[in-house]
Image 1 (tube, each protein chain N blue to C red):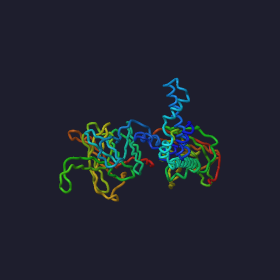
Image 2: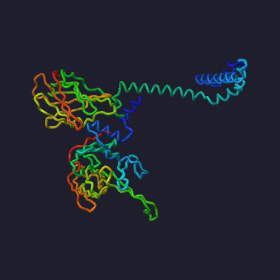
Image 3: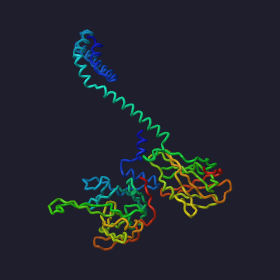
Image 4: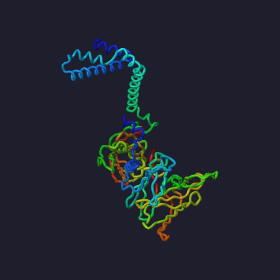
Amino acid sequence: MDRTSWLDTAVDGIRFGPDRKAVRAELEGHIEDKTADLQRIFPDIPEGEARERALAGMGDPEELKISLAKIHKPWLGYLWRVSQVLAAGALGVFLFLCVFKNDYYQSAGFPLWMDWTAHFATPAEVSPEKARVGDFTFEIVEAVWLEDRDEYLLTLRASSPRFWEQLNDQALYDGLTGVTPDGARCSMQRLASEQPAGTVHLARWGLFHREFGVYIPAGERTGEDWVTLELDAPQGSFALSALVTEEVAEP
Amino acid sequence: MLTLIWGLAGYPLPTAELEFRRLERTHLLPQSEIVFSNGARSEGRRVSKSDGSVFALDGTELYLRGRFVADAREEWAVLACLDRSYNSFIREVPLDGGPVLAPLVPHNWYLDTNGYWVTEGPGETPEGEPAYVYEYHNFSAFLLFGAPEETVRAELTVRDGGVERTGGGWALENGLWLLGVEDEETRVRDRDRVSEIPYTLRLYDAADTLLAERSGRLWEDGDTSSVSG
């Protein structure tokens, strides 16, 4: 029996195609190794005879066929393939949902990014451009006057390369003060109160940043208003100012 | 993929100390040397896996429900409970050179029974049979900063819901004390919020001379930041 016929007979009982192919390749490798060993031990032996002896040493292909068929059940192979497809599919769906529908995961945990608030104009000028407190970099990324509320809205971004550490809201609220162009100072309150004060809410976030909308009562406007946000925290402080020129109606 | 899963789980960190440092950074609090952490590994007579223990200088193992970490410098300390629950908090504790008491609960909560120690030895079952008995002694826990070095005994009295509760304490490393008032069977609705509870603290030396006395209301100096779970 030649090598091809021997191999065809030995793997004929394996019904799952990929397994049959893999086992055939392995058996072929064993035959090659045996042939090479014989040629090494008996250098004078012709190659054809070495191959025949190697094949004879592999045993009866019919008996091997029965043993291999018992081990390689087709349903196991199909189950493995199906599980691979399902796992790949689940990963794909998961990634799709994470990229396009991230906010749906709020009930499961904390979504990695959210952006469902309206975007407003960037400030005409800022001074300074950025400030740093601890591991966080702060900058004013939006600045408008809301005409229906008579309030300035400044969006303060806090960013950090440590995406696993997000600025705590309360720490910001406790230390933040808004200063209007006429010098009036207002601390921040999370809920509306009878006394004039600013309010802050988390507007949007991404992996490396959080943006807070800071609402400050406007008072007397001149058309070119420098509004300042001051933060006084145990770890440090800053004062960031933005020039508000844009007037909008909040959607 | 792993980052997404880590993020959906809330970015857990492997040790309580790392979690504590993260809390400090995200709350814009400066860091200093950690002086207290109830993460001692022991054979454990703990009630729950989430309970951590600390050893007093006299060898008593003291258990606290939850993980607490504190660091301190000259003018203030930072104390945090790291549980991902309503009881989690981080708080600055101003230090003024004298003894300063810090309850191990948020300011807007009640004085929970959150500590215990265990005694064991020969005893008997309720039916009178001889047995080896473990007895759990519960208390509401406080951390004491700034106790004088000569302190050998502490006496704390609080008035909670009209009921007076007293207790002592144990000296720990780094000059800290863990104080505890005994647990009474008081219904929740009879208890006061921690920030409304008056207390009196007395510290004595080896000759039983009064070294320091302080009274006031617990968590008197304002809000505690809550940590979302």
